[in-house]
Image: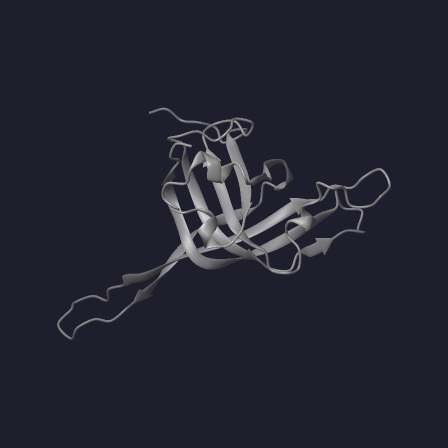
Length: 170
């Protein structure tokens, strides 16, 4: 069995917009994906975007010998700790992600590809995880002398995700 160390083989992007910016979440096109902002080098390694435990119903009949749980709704969760960019003037740089993840609850797709270097452009047949979120108010950190200036963006699920998208042609 071939194994792959997960260092330097992940691409993370944010595609701003409502759920309609990707026509088919299971088959996004290369054209749709080119509008995304590559955030790979800004995301700290302790980020968390993933499927979560599904909601269940735990009803059993009198004759059942054991309790059973039946999944009813899928769930997912997200949290993005991000580095911030500042110009030599000490002001936020034009690439600072606070412009993307502002306090007005921006919607967008968090898209992850694992298996190819971050610099490799999306191509047909790439397999992706795609999650639609609304960004909550950024939690800006700094002034502690404990590291680089950062912010954390809690991501609020909007009800649409897949861990099995396959990129379609152009």
